[in-house]
Image (cartoon, rainbow, N blue to C red):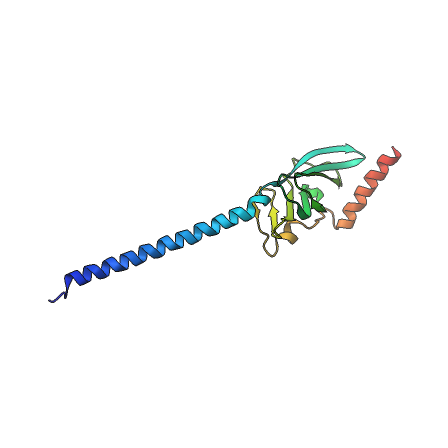
Amino acid sequence: MDWGNVPGWVAAVGTIGTLTLTVRVAWNQVRDRRQEQEDRRAAQARLVTAWVDDVRRGKGFTATVKVKNSSDQAVYGLRVSLAVGVRGQYVAGQSALGPGASAEIEFKLAGYPRGELEAPGIAFTDAGGLQWIRLATGELRHPSGSDLDEHFSEHPGSFERIEARNAVIKRLWEQDDHA
């Protein structure tokens, strides 16, 4: 049995090993650069947060959500969603939130929440023109095709329609005006 030139075989195996290692190192560097780019892109978005500050009965039922932009650039097209269990999902927003600014967004509710409220979700466009969503779980990401419809659309909850829920809210606020 003739195995040919042993040094030639060793050189071939070494060349293949070196090529494999080179490709792997290059692939890791590309992946790391992409991750660094995404981290830079998300730097502003990570600094935009929201939380439920207060739920009260006064003139009707109101939940106050605070939104804070701790970045040094404005965000645009801000939308805030608040899920209130069987009372539905409420959505409000504003056109922009300046650098270092805070906003209080009040939601008129169809009744006092039956349990603890989840953290609100937020959607916005950063100064670089990238869209972001932060879900109630705190997850920050670029929205997929159905995310904005799913997480940032009003839902009637146990009411048949949004209009029915809004009629209850209106009655509650009118009752308080006459009380």
